[in-house]
Image (tube, rainbow, N blue to C red; front, side, top):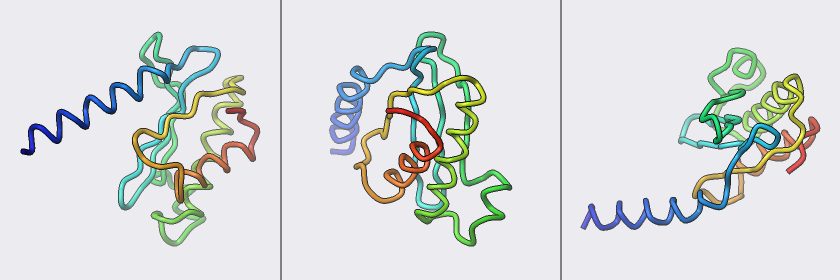
Length: 120
């Protein structure tokens, strides 16, 4: 049964990701959320390269919050990735939340990025 569930998950993910493609003008903001941390990457899918990266593992975010698995920490990660994107002259992005719902920490990360000037 496990193989069947994994296969269905991979098929679903493939269907979802074929619609979301990042380019050099409009890279993909990919979010990964674990139980303890949240990670954000700006990815150019044409050249298969990461343009910018931010997560709750960075020291400046760890200093500002007491717990890293909170909405506040996610908001700071969103602001941080937006600042890095704007330094590289990236203003518009494609938002990729994976298969997670747009709720809670993922929503706060998006709001932090929007606050700093990213458009998606």
